[in-house]
Each structure stands twice: as structure tokens, then as C-alpha cells.
Length: 173
Image (cartoon, rainbow, N blue to C red; front, side, top):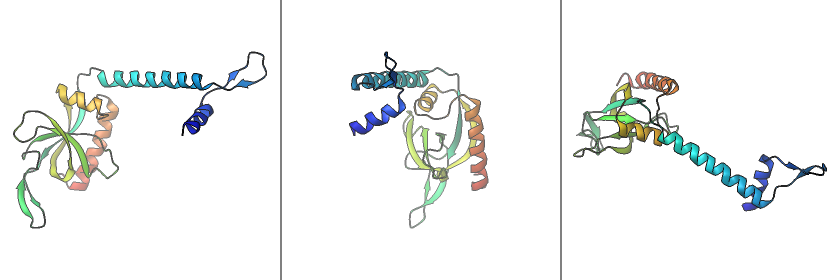
């Protein structure tokens, strides 16, 4: 595997010209290792900077947990979900799995707790979909840290497109 990576890296890195003008010189393993470390450090610094930036708000797709709904083989009526009470406001992350937004990651306050939790739930358990600017520091931090929505117009446009699709497919729920 190491040889494969070194060969692959050598295809991507420019060759040094020999000082005597006789053509390109191969990089040594130490030079390749140093370049790799430098690029990795730069990537990590950029990632830290992106995740720690302070923004006033983030755009977010928001909804509420539905009330009673049938569950199981017997179609027993249940209120809310295992984690959330009916009507709980949840902050939804962008689509992540290519499943048509059937399962979604959300942040919300669970039953009998004041702390926020992140869970994956069925999008059919969410209603009253809408676009909102979110100013809560915890939500902003989690969205930015986990590649969620941000403060840009691009995020707002993506949410509007997703919201339009959700409302068309689910009949406005």
C-alpha cells in the first residue's frame, strides 16, 4: 500500500529539475513525506478555521415533530417519537445519504431534558417544514462543525429547493 501511495503521489507532485539541466529528478521519500505533512497541516488548519468561524446566524431547515401517528404491525397510535415529544422543534441537517431525504439528521431537545441531542429520524415524523435564520449558539456551532447549513445565500437557496421538493412530495405536511 505504501508503494502505491508513493507512486500515486509522485504522479501528482511536480518533478524537480536537476541543477545540471539533464531533466527531472525524482523526489526522495523524505521530501514526499515532508510535502504530505505540510499539506495535511494546511488542510487541518483550514478545517479548524472553517469550524471555528463566528457567524451571526445560519440558515436552517426547521420542522416540528408530528403528533399522533400509527406505529408497528398493530398500527398502535403513538404521540411524537422515542426521542421527541409532539411539537418539538427540530433543526434538520442537509441531505447526506442520497435516500431522497427519507432519513434525516436533526438536532432538538429530547423528552425530559433541556440539552440538545443529534439523532437520525424518519422525515415522515416531521411536519410544518420551514426555512429559518437560527441564532442559537449551540445550533450554529453544530451546523458549522458537522458540515451542515451555514450563513451563505447558497445554503438558503439549497434549503428553498429542498423545502419545495418536500412540500410537493408530502402534500404540504
